[in-house]
Image 1 (cartoon, rainbow, N blue to C red):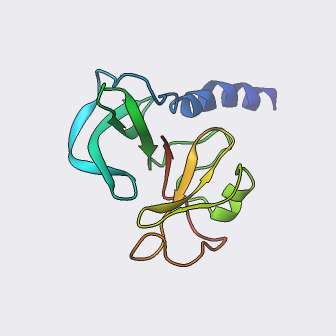
Image 2 (cartoon, rainbow, N blue to C red):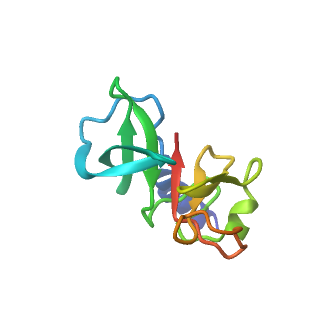
Image 3 (cartoon, rainbow, N blue to C red):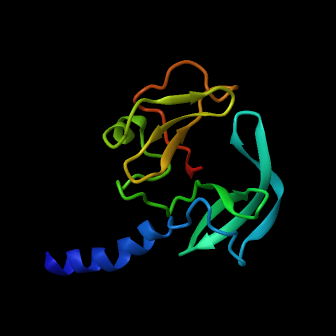
Length: 144
């Protein structure tokens, strides 16, 4: 069992620390500008960049000074400190949420996680139709 724990400590921190991009950090020099824009809030679209960190793809945007103001991922390899992944259920995410479910009309529902990430859910044509049910799936994680 100790071998498994040691292996876990060697493998999982890399996955968990892949999200160590921080709001306010300068855009990494390895970032690739994307043709598509990214929605970072309801009715707020921004230029997008792809950042590859520890084998995980993050989509980021920057403020006027070139510092990160939005970090997101829907990469299936990303694991939060709570062991959540894209595709996990709202029911599972609620075990780790801090505060209430937030609804940003036209963009998403989200829950704040204790790790600092927000788990995002989208439902229906407007992305925020009805109430989330326990089986709604996490579609991406973000920080802003």
